[in-house]
Image 1 (tube, rainbow, N blue to C red):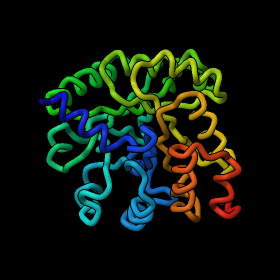
Image 2 (image 1 turned 90 degrees about the vertical axis):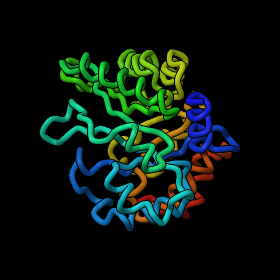
Image 3 (image 1 turned 135 degrees about the horizontal axis):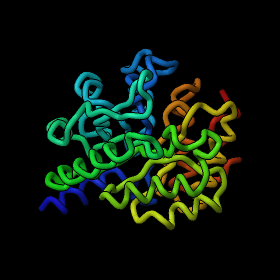
Image 4 (image 1 turned 45 degrees about the vertical axis):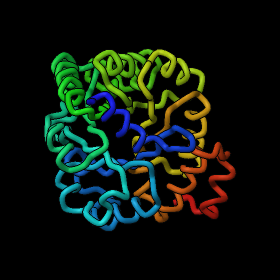
Amino acid sequence: MAFLGKEVRLRRLMNKTSGHLLAIALDHAVGWGVIEGIERIQETLDIVAGAEPDAITIQKGIAEKCMAKWAGRQPFILKCTSFAPFYPGYDGYMGSVEEAVRLGADAVAVGVTVGGKDQPELLKNLALFTEKAALYGMPVVTHIYPKGELIPANERYDYKHVAYAARAAAEVGVDIVKTFYTGDPGSYRKVIEACPAYVVVSGGPKLDRLEDVFKMTRDAMDAGAAGITYGRNVWQRKDAAAVIKALKAIIHENASVKDAIEMVDGRTE
């Protein structure tokens, strides 16, 4: 029965038409601080959910305090770990599978950094978390990045490191892998081919040009990505709802970058 539960929840997350995922992450405050765009979290969450992404990613306190009006209408992923500005390479537990079930979440998410001294412990924690989640039929998403101190900063988006991170997550039982985009469709396709789990693109820091966000999305989807999970590249812009709708067109309707830009009427901030 647990296997059926996982399938039910995954089908709530993945778009019924395209089979892809457009998720918006709103889990940044513990790791990054109360940054631009999430100062008034209820307001931002309402704008994002009103644009009907396939899912949002939030911490348990935000789920409890801000999701009541969206109950049963907006699927969500419960982020169960976070790093901190003072220790950016280590994600500590902040939630549990049981809490995710109690809150009505459709998946749980765990952060992992590879390429650092804490990698063995973080991968062990991820493996234990997938074991617990399987008992409840709960899909597991991991935000896994090759950004540990043993990997030079200029190599963190290289295929060999991104593919390793994605494959390591799949090896321990993760269902959806969120990781860096390598910068070009050819190398990203190799990442996806190396990973039997769904691979979705992380947005990262806000890009100056909205066109670049749309191009990264289009290129990743052409490479075979299962979708995206963006945060700052959506809600740090003036018209987040329009950006979400344009991203939906790319991901679910195969729209071009030009089509997406036209949908937001040239608004690129």
